Length: 131
Image (cartoon, rainbow, N blue to C red; front, side, top):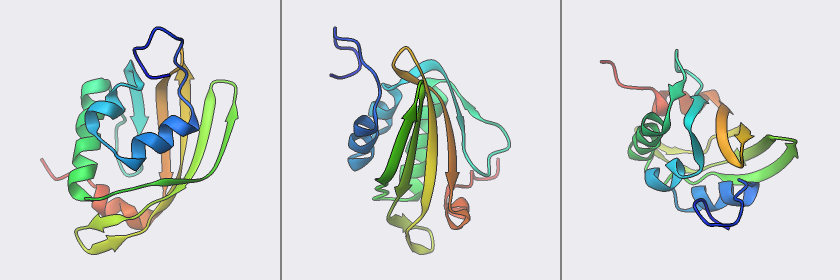
């Protein structure tokens, strides 16, 4: 079952794993509600909406080429999905191996809110450039 199919889609940890096995901003944007809110560590304000979310994913993949988080543990509780992950990639200072937890809140089977908690060592690589 995929987003947009006639069967009722419900985002699962398997979708999370598939998304990050081969991440792409367009695919990431297909699993969220139009009014998605994403709280990234280190950001003063959350990312709001599909376009901003897609752009943020593209920025992260540009800053950390080859970023590949994998699921180490997961749990669900009603409309909440918790994913503990470890990742690998290459940041500006070389290889990175962060770990963290994503807490996802679902609405109508899509991701409405994401709160990301991660290893502080990853924050410099994710920092937004000064504007």
